[in-house]
Image (cartoon, rainbow, N blue to C red; front, side, top):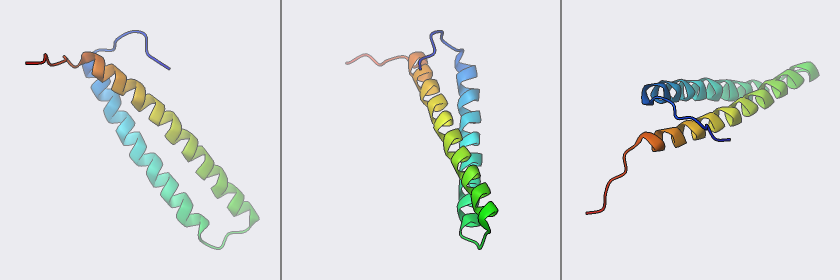
Length: 84
């Protein structure tokens, strides 16, 4: 998916920071879910950790898509060097 209009460079920078922070939070959730799943859990506990893990993976994919769109926006704003 491509953003058709250009965003202001300051907006792109702020959104990239937020996406980076979101990535860190998602990674923490994924790691905690993995570690929790390594403990002795009953059937319901395993089901709940599986749901958390699945949702965190989905969120990570969505965030990656956002970061790719923002990266393409950043490249639009970066002046290209001329060959000397």
